Length: 246
Image (cartoon, rainbow, N blue to C red):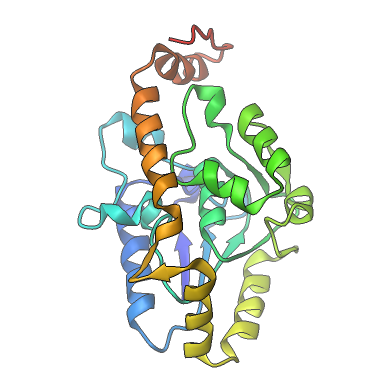
């Protein structure tokens, strides 16, 4: 199954409709025995996913699935399925875009793709699993550098650090080719292997529970701070933020 984030005019940013559609598609992939792998990509050639749709957030829109908030950001970030998932990163993947890559089992990217968690530059926190998953998936000190600075890295560096399986001119074609190499194998064996690899039980990864709980607690605390209001305001006004640590 190929799932495409189809809002190129908004750099494939995530709103309520996208979260609902992606979450439902992933649930269908889990139920359908004919689906043996899932590829997630973005429409167009500029952006894989620009993260949350800030205009939707400003309207008070719920960006999670209305019936399955536990599936997390984009209906995907915390939605465990035992079919292998592959991110085909066709362009920029900052913030929530990087978090979708971190949530995927495998990932390939176009050479022009960039990755990073810039939330600290806005007085916020990468709350869709980005902080603890980056530390789990990259060398610790390099991961912490990226988290603390909010700086972006290229596709080449992401591959060198182990975030990507390949950097290729056609990410979707490469992801489909990778999927073909997976689906020639016994599906029940692949699915059982994924559950063991993630230590998953009943569709949940218990090892991540504490990370999600701490993320939620810290994010709620941050949202009440003056700095969390100053960051987005300074960004909108195109000026450097003035942090007060309050």
